[in-house]
Length: 499
Image (cartoon, rainbow, N blue to C red; front, side):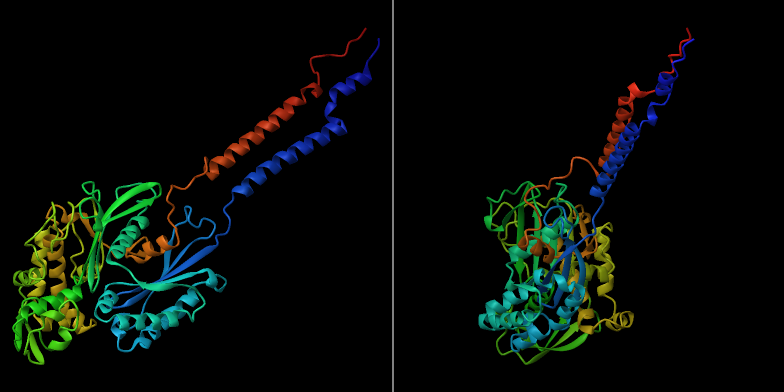
């Protein structure tokens, strides 16, 4: 009997070979390393951010906005968000025409806040812009040298701060409307996803803008109202128009000018509450290019402004500032200005929101006739009762809400042609996803090229899917490795032969 002991031991214990053990360990380490590298490679990195600052120099006040976006993505898919806002104390910079240095000084407090909000290491690369709107447009029309001095004072003040100052200038009405439209649709993710866009309704103190995309408008009729954008690979032909002098403050001047054409010593104004009584100066009322040519001759120094709170009569007064008598186009809004048929939803912001929110009329699901009835009851409320209900609001602003509300409804329905059916398409908004609605974000996005003209590339697989596939492949490699060792497996089927 011959027992092949040596060969039997070799067949039963092939895994004990040092070389085999080393290969197996190395293979396992390689596979673990593969999975580890794949996971680490796809792990989100700590975010670094870039910043931008825009000053909105409006007719009634100036506001500062700070924007932030991921530095790694920049103008790819990085979401630009507003991180801070600061309202400058005092009136708009156009009010400092007689003392321009004060215009620059007024910005200091908010700029110091910006220094605290933006990391110091980002100062030198943070762009700083100032855009002035209708208030400075009017000042530039009235006194261009005064306008230049205000800008000079503002620039000297801003250049003292450590940011990358990019200049201060007056925006055209078309730019203000178009950038407001970009802001609203960018924040609502409508541009990147190629969704139906939202129209933009902006109301300031000295001007108002309407901007929207209409399938019936290709820009051939009234080309001056056309703006073309290519954003995220989609082309947008935008209708936009800005009405200078039709902001709520200047319209109030025009309405009072209509009522004081004969230079009376007293007027009974249906747009102010019953019991309202104030003495006002003719020179101050007509101290604006919007009404300066209408100042009555031989008028007294002052007039008494008395309210009687009648909504329907107030509507007639407001209508007096519009001209509906001529239109040389297929469709017009007012004053002979072309406007295509309204289309899609609209976001109404700035003074639209603040006035309608104060009046508790910002819910557009309420029928239009009900809105008018509620406003009529508000206007008819005695002035002393209004003061008691709102003790914390300055009397000047409080007195004007009846007029402003009436003007907004008249502008939307009589001016822009919203009907009881299309009025619910309007949404009064203050912010979208934490950012203020307005032109400032769109302005910065345009100047920093933060919106790509083409849709950004995206990875073929999401992070989780990529890790899963790598893991499966690693397991497959392990199985193949084990299978490759099959020749070394114990040959259990072969029994030792005894002869």
